[in-house]
Image (tube, rainbow, N blue to C red; front, side, top):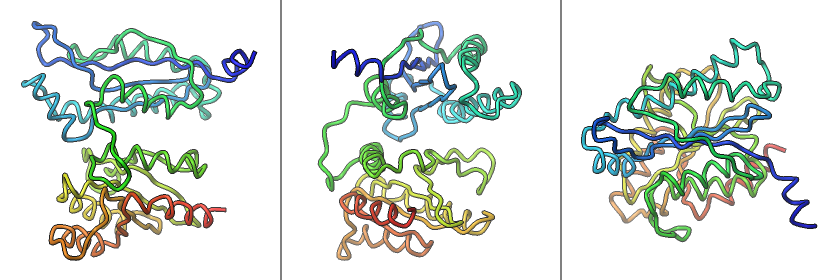
Length: 285
């Protein structure tokens, strides 16, 4: 009885794995993303490869892969989804019912030959975002060893931990994810900021940074923060979540710390992120 009740409370979602090949003659495909949606509400989530180690893996498997095309593909699909809802006269996605099913079918018919949607599958799950992460980890992400909090890791590891913290703080539905930087920089900018929140007329941006693996990424985030602060029509604040605590005696750590702070970005290590979110939650109430 308990199992039956639990199943009734779960939602049934539909998902497709996105596949790519750079050579149709060889017919060798590699998974590059996941699309999952709720047919009843038109809520849709899409995640494609974005980390350097993910693109490196694609290049090993598909040496002729066009990285620019892959980076632009996500924006293209999201724009088509937004346009479809507007043209259909659907202001509220929850009123869309089966409209998203029609859209996905059109996508499947018009995608380039090098990109395909794998056959549709269904899954029972309670949370659309959590299911997207699970499917992505199982079908697309390179295998990763378990990492304890505070240990060096990739942005994907840091982001996974941060997402858990947002959910535990019950703020997941109040934040935006994967926010495009292009409205504040230049058209075509592929950068996405991991999280964004709103607080008393201020928009806050949170980006994960792997100091151990890619310390130079702090310059990209610093540049983007400067552009947002100067061009956005709202007050803004910025946070960087790092895989390790920045040590003053470490020259590379000082470089990251000073680069961030010069652009008004507060650095917080993974191990301190839960405390930071708890303080933010109190301010949002």
